[in-house]
Image (cartoon, rainbow, N blue to C red; front, top):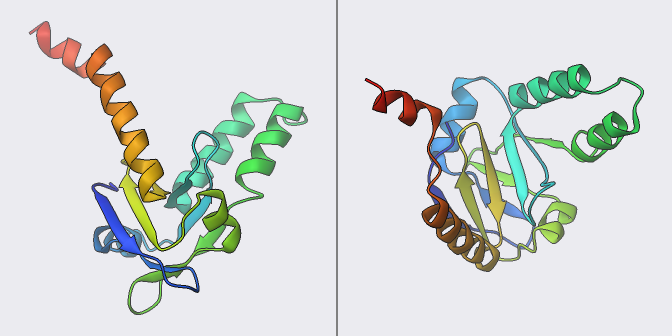
Length: 152
């Protein structure tokens, strides 16, 4: 699982070190990182290729194969996605398109989200993290597994 929040420098060529734990996951799964522009936030989404294959299958089974909805989703996600391998020092080279979309210049924030991760501009991430924290603490969702534990 992709965990933690890690701040890493981005050089003038768009190179940034993938957090060591993330590299270990990719190596262990014998996979590559896939990144694309998030559909829900001004950041970059990343995952291993297997997760994107599962997403493709889900889109195909939950939408009409010839529908505009399926076309739109697949164009936005898969048409935008790019595979990244890391160099001997653990760096990936993010495209100008991705960096511009997420407004990332000299520092990137990697945010673990379990099976995927996000890459943010630090200022945008800190604002988003504050918003999320306030919302979750205000509403305190109860997970199904937590409810099950109460019944024992």
